[in-house]
Amino acid sequence: MQSQHTLQHIATHCNTLQHAATHYNTLQHTATHCNTLHHAATRCNTLQHTATHCNTLQHTATHCNTLQHTSKHCNTLQHATKHCYTLHCNTLQHTSHQKDVSHESTNTASHTAPHCILLQHSATHYNTATHVISRRRLT
Picture 1 (cartoon, rainbow, N blue to C red):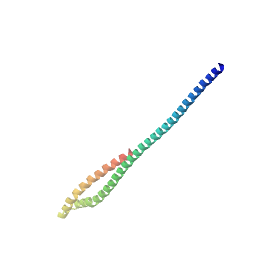
Picture 2 (cartoon, helix red, strand yellow; picture 1 turned 45 degrees about the vertical axis):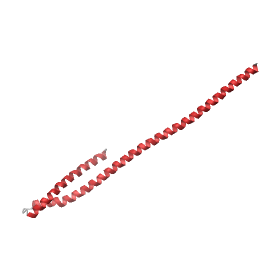
Picture 3 (cartoon, helix red, strand yellow; picture 1 turned 180 degrees about the vertical axis):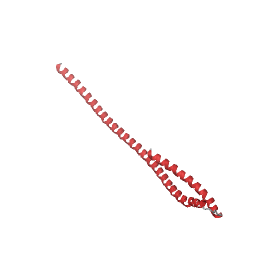
Picture 4 (cartoon, one colour; picture 1 turned 120 degrees about the vertical axis):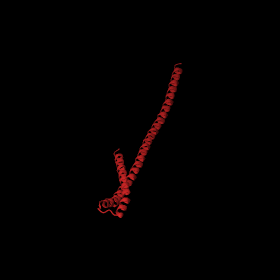
């Protein structure tokens, strides 16, 4: 009987070990699967962060291109304003200071005055745009 009891005890112990080994294999498989999922989640978060950063850079580039275009437009406007002011407003100033205002001088003054008003408006527009661009560069 002793031998039967010993064999039964060994069999029970063997079954317990077999069960523990199966459980260990299951845990090991689960741990591997969990590590794979963790790695994938980390990779996904990195990609998401990179995509957000890329979108921010794209938005900044678009904003920069808009400012650059506006700056070129303002530089052109400033150049044209200075050129026109020199041509037209100086002519108007010269003709208005003449003591004998002839018929031709009056026509020149009448023709030039609207240009000077337009140039004043353009200069105001330029100054406003320059102010806006300067403020945007600071932010």
